[in-house]
Each structure stands twice: as C-alpha cells, then as structure tokens.
Amino acid sequence: MNTFLSRLNTIFAFTLSVMAALTFCCFLTTAFNSHKASVYLGTGKAIVKNVPDYSANREKSDLGFIVFDMTADLTKIFNWNVKQLFLYLTAEYETKDHQLNQVVIWDKIIRRGENAMLDYRSINTKYYFWDYGNGLKGNKNVTLTLSWNVIPNAGTLPKVMGEGSHKFKFPDEYSANRF
Amino acid sequence: MDLMQFLPESFKKIPCHMDYEGQKRAEQLFQVIIILFGVVGFIWGYICQQFSQTMYILLAGFALSCILTLPPWPMFRRKPLQWQKERPEPSSDQKEASTPSQTSQKSKKKK
Image 1 (cartoon, rainbow over the protein chains, first blue to last red):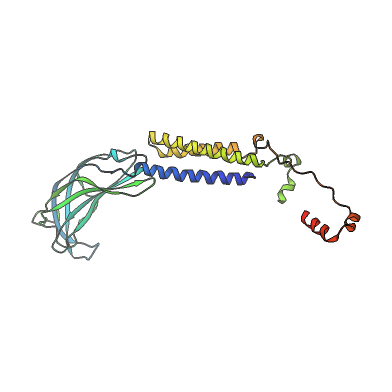
Image 2 (tube, each protein chain N blue to C red):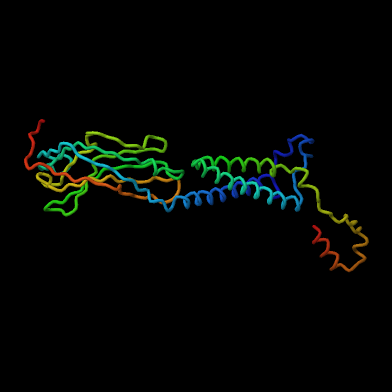
C-alpha cells in the first residue's frame, strides 16, 4: 500500500473478489428456479421411406418425414442469469432391437431479448429422422418432446423437459421415393 | 531505475508516498467504496434484470476508488513519521579510545 502500483494491485484484486462474490449471489438468486414451461406439440402428415443410409452402414434403413406444430411461451424462463436457451425436439420410440431410441430432429437457439413466443405451424424437421434399422414403419408409439438447456451467466447448466408431449404413429407402408 | 535520472528535477520532487495512517485510511476508503458500489449495483441489476449493469456499476466504483486512493493525496499525508534526529558520527580518535569490540559492532549495525 506504500506505492502507486501496490495500491493499484490491491484495489484490482479486491474488485475482482467483490465481482466473484456478486456473480455467486446472482447465481443464488436464480438457483431455485424450475425453468419449466408448457409446450403444445402436434404433427401433420407422417410418412416413412426405406432408403440406404450412406451416413452410417449403407444398408437400407427407415427414414421418417414429419411436419409438426409447436406452441410454447418461454418468456417466463428468461431472467438476468439466462443468456440463451437451446431448444431441441426429441422423438422417442421403441423398436424390437432397441428399447430406447431418441432422435433429435429439430433445434433452435433463443437469445435473451429475442422472441420467445414460439408458434409454428406445419414446419419441417431440421435433421433427418433416421432409424438404426427398420423400426419406424408401422411404429404406433413415437413421442415428441421439447427440451431445453438453460445457458446462464453463472451457475449450473440445467436441462429441462417441457411439460407436454405428443404421440403419433407412422404408416404401415413405405412411401415411394418421390412424393 | 536508470530512467529515473533522466526525469526533470521538479518531477522527482513530487511527493509520492503515504504515511502509515494514510495507507490504512486509503485501504478502508477503497474497500467501503467498492463494496458500496457492488451492493448498489447488485440491487439495481436485480431490479432491471441486467447483470451487466451490476458489473458496470462495480467498475465505476473501481474507477472512483482508483482516483481517490491511487495518488498520494494530502489527506493521506497528515501524520508523517517523527524520525529521531540524526546522531553525530563519532570521530576516529574517539573510536580508538573506547573499547574496540562495542564500537565496531555499533558501527556495523548503523550501516
């Protein structure tokens, strides 16, 4: 504390300590939020094709095509400790070979300040809905759920599943390769 | 250190130290300022739900405490140390007259 530089050093170190404490307090103010919201999901037409999956084993696998609707109000999730939300739509189903299959078919990033009122009608999936085999044709129980990661300024990185899901079925016949 | 000798004499004469009392007061001053700005910034940031506001207000407190405590302002120099007066150096013939062991030790300590 006797020279200019040692005072500068002390003040800077003290400011950093206070900054760390404030950041921790900011985390504490939002640590017990549930980050939940209700989501409406629906599907329009669903078809399934049997085509070679060149991204995997090149054998003929089932490829599903669906269009879906989604309505959700996520504005309540945002607060001063949320930078952005990473939303992802998961299709979950069971096949003979594998009990649990999960495919992410759509995702979206919502930054704080952007529109968080989702209202989509008949939109296409963003990623291919490949099955690892032939489990989609005639599958009667495919569940769509929307989940999200909450990306905070400080603290934990919660993974939350939206309240509300939608079940749909794939037709019993393969569609022609052109539609 | 070598650069110091090129500085003008007037610049070198600028007092740049605080006394002990002043150092203590400076430390208390910046701690109070930074904590105060931190708390106010936290409340304000919570009200407008912008954590960046908290950080800006805290940095404003940092800047203010830099201005108030980095330069050795006169208010930190009010109680200079009262040094004892310089004792006259014993002359060479006196040294020889006294016992050699004690004087040699004393002169070493002084250096």
